[in-house]
Image 1 (cartoon, rainbow, N blue to C red):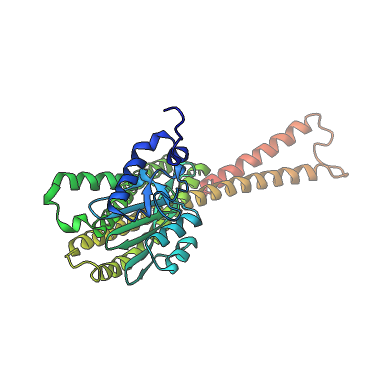
Image 2 (image 1 turned 60 degrees about the vertical axis):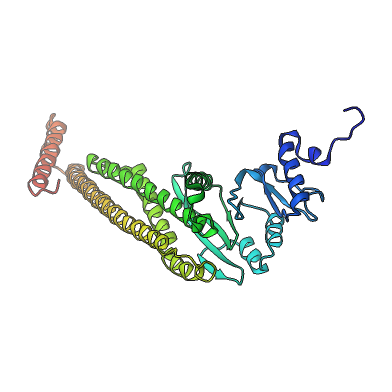
Length: 368
């Protein structure tokens, strides 16, 4: 249209999201809703104008899950401003903001009047390094919202969203109340993450079986194979360190949810507790297998060391005898064979004969 101005929301986001923004503006004017958070993908998060909300808000539509009145917010490595806006938008305690901003090495659960705050760690596999790393996840759980903040991106969040939407869609109006709640979403997060860990442990076991086969097939110590075994051992220790504290966290979480939700969620917590026990059992077996492979490596190394020492000992003795013979005949005195034209060949024969006798003795004693 000639002479018309481009709306501010189009300048901000471009026409790609025009229909989304128009819908939100119309909905806000109609319902006077408090849109603290909308959801676009992280690389398109920008400050929005006062036409939607009176203060700055985070734009992240790509990672939203909204069922009924439940807000599902997911952030990956957010900056301080995004965290502050999230906390202020839902009027949460300032201590939560501090805990999110600071890196945490240990799991914990804090219970507030209006929400539950969780710091939990899950393993994330780095394919480039072949190692598991600890991915910190902060979870804020309220009566009508759940926020998850991760240090590293994870595809499992999208998987959880798809599974949950499909489950609710299939059940439709028959979906039970607890399934349209942040507590069930929290269960799905733990459930999917634990399933992922169990799957990775299965691959872990297959890798160990292959390594064990390689160890017994080789008659020498493969430094590269040994390095892989040590990495597996380090991964097993990390997995155990991550999962062990979660048994206690789940017990505390089960007690805490009783203050916010009147429904019976015990069966779901029992399922999670069963899976943590199963994971720890697998890790224990894996650790024993790694120790077994390590002992094989240690034994093989000792055998090779003893063999090498035996060879060096024989060489030392043989060379010592040859040195003694050559030293004797090198004296500046009258010695047998001194005038014999074949003296050199005779001496070489004596040395080789003595060497053969020494080697035969060593083999008979099974030192070689």
